[in-house]
View 1 (cartoon, helix red, strand yellow):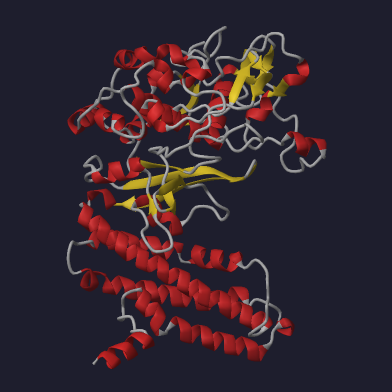
View 2: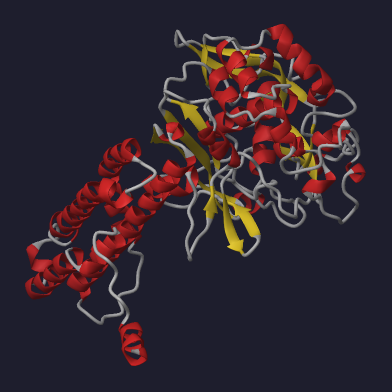
Amino acid sequence: MNLLDESWIPVRRSNGEQDWITPLQITDPTIVALDARRPDFNGALIQFLIGLVQTTTPMDSEIEWKQWNEQPPSVEELKKWFEPVHEAFLFDGDGARFMQDFDLRTAGAKDKNFNSISALLIEAPGENTLKENKDHFIKRNTVNSLCLGCSAIALFTLQTNAPSGGAGHNTSIRGGGPLTTLVIAGDTNSLWQTVWLNIQKHSDFLAANGDSTKTDLEYSFPWVNEMKTLQAEGGQLTPIQVHPAHNFWGTPRRIRLDLDHISAGECDCCGRQSEFLVERYITKAKGFDYKGGWRHSLSPYYENKPGEMLPLHPQPGGIGYKHWLAWSLGLQGNKKNVQPASIVSYVLESQRLKGKQCRLYAFGYDMDNMKARCWYESTLPLYGLSEKNKYEQHSVQREIQRWLEAVDLAAFYLRSAVKSSWFGDGVDARGDYAFIDASFWSQTENGFYQLLRSLIDQAREEDEDIVFTPLREQWRDLLIKTAIRLFDADLVGAAPIAQQNPRRTAEAYNRLCASLRGDKLKEALGLQPAKADKKTKKSKQDAA
């Protein structure tokens, strides 16, 4: 089975029907979306297709990009693109196999050395969980066999998102459970348009992370040769040792499926009948150890320390407008420096979306070391951001940073007032109050996007204060009203009167109102010049 020739990718057609296609069919205009039963599989498949096209396309100008966007390549053209890498996508056989360790073999291995195929799934309960009978929410034995297609998707999903798996079982190039962000055109009506929008010009791709002179197949697809050809035993693998395409095809886990021990029946994932159901695999520690400044084009990065950028990962609380700025335009400040995924910047700076609305598609696992806490997936509107030049985008960036700082300040006022009402001033009331902030962010989300659309439409290269002042006033008014309403109706006021302390509540309420209408919130939004520090004033007077 070769993954470039077989129909194994689940998709949804424009008439609503589910189908399975080969990668050669992705330009079919009736295919509108990926349609695996698992959202993490869909997330992995879109990265697989982007990686495949980016690795093989000869497109090297925006004129060519536009031509193939309007008139997608035919099956025959895609065959020419894929032919040089065809052997890397062989999924079975005695030699090299897609995403499987070249050196491992299943023949002769003892039964105790095999893992159930379900262990490829990131959320599957681990050995210790099963031993202690703690699989309360995600039960054992729900996935016992997978068809070849689902096995390939599961394998790619694990290698792409690989969390820590114990000693020697390494994480992916972007660490365990990375955040992935793509750009989607607002009127996208085919899978090809989504994939093609997130493809860089060939020369730009080769100039990115890696050594483009390393053109032998194993430098892009590490499973086609012995592991030692790239990484010495006990060593590490850095970008300069491989081709830029390796970013899409990293294999931190040493895995080989047992394709001799198979059965027939229904796949426990897709539900299709198959004569080749995979039930187990073997694995070995000390796979590729990715270190040294990898930069994947589909992930945003944050500055861990000067000169060190690390990939972002989803966190508890989900995806919301608090992430909009960092993931679309980046965040710069004393506390945190975040750079958006390079493909997001690439698309927004190009003219590909001229005249079109666009969205940011973000997804990934929230991992707690080896444990998957949640899968998050969402789209964030970008409106006409791609039509603005870089100066106007920087103007939007600076303004939204003000807005988010104001939200943090207003949420702090609300949280402090609620705690004061419940427990009194000066009381060390420890606990998790994240739900207060979460409620505040949630209640202001719709208003944020309404004002964001106006902000982007009105963005200019000059006179920011004049243009944006009315929007700042509206945002401040929304923050004040939302905080007071949450305090009065949902948090403090919702409690039975017998459990309230009227005096404490009144004092906390008055202090909240005064703080929200005070100078600090105005200063954060640029509605009032920041007051000079007393020490600064005194030193100026002394100097005079």
